[in-house]
Image 1 (tube, rainbow, N blue to C red):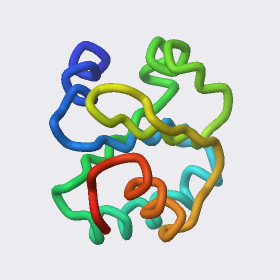
Image 2 (cartoon, rainbow, N blue to C red):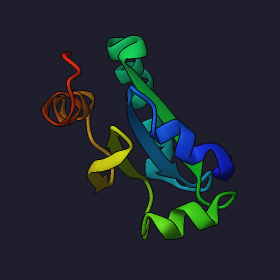
Image 3 (cartoon, one colour):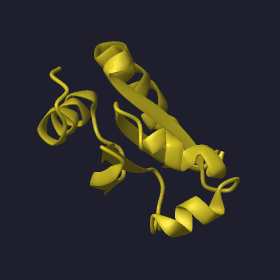
Image 4 (tube, rainbow, N blue to C red):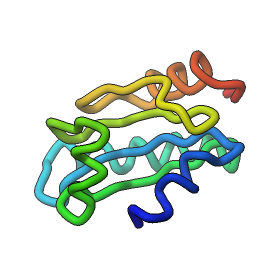
Length: 103
């Protein structure tokens, strides 16, 4: 995945990346929230999950020190990041604030 990560975030679409660990309780709690976000935004936003244990180089590159960490990429550049669990409406607000996506 790491060789194509650059292609994924350089998409014309806004991309929300969730850095997670399979062993992480809060990461598990975030999964259904991100599914609800995806159901709301549809194809307007890509949501990508990156397992930090399988993609350690990416986690280091983006300075992910705790999980879950979400990074919002717009035009291939990180525009927002936060560690921890957010609720659906908070994530939708972040997407709308930092991109041209209307939700």
